[in-house]
Amino acid sequence: QVQLVESGGGLVQPGGSLRVSCAASGFISDYYAIGWFRQAPGKEREGVSCISSSDGSTYYVDSVKGRFTISRDNAKNTVHLQMSSLKPEDTAVYYCAARFLKCSPNWNGMAYWGKGTLVTVSP
Image 1 (cartoon, rainbow, N blue to C red):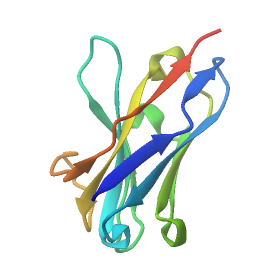
Image 2 (image 1 turned 30 degrees about the vertical axis):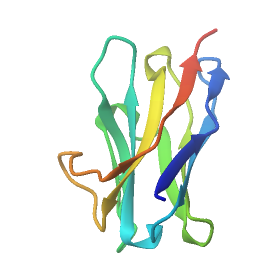
Image 3 (image 1 turned 45 degrees about the horizontal axis):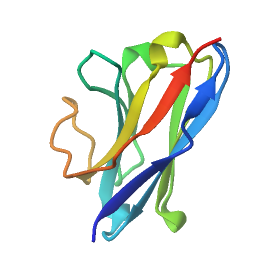
Image 4 (image 1 turned 120 degrees about the vertical axis):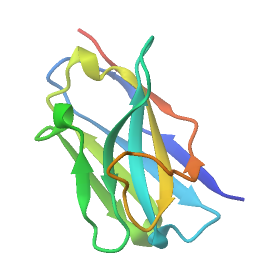
């Protein structure tokens, strides 16, 4: 059974840091690109970051460049998203998703999705 399980969400103050993680099981995650998406209340879901399986290439949406870092630990089938200098506008449910081999420049074609973890940035 394919599963992606997010963890690490919570409440953090503006300017703070948080790391969310995505644990994969039920498929060979080494061959899959893992992406992070988020959906804020009343807004559409957007792609945040992605890491490819083949060469570890990473991609970020402009609004998080320089603040977020994605990494993967293939031995543990886990992908992390380290978030720093957090802003209230980063508040959202964060989802991880998997796509075969490479990240998509259009953030589409994700085959598997997790259920999300809530990140709230507030004083």
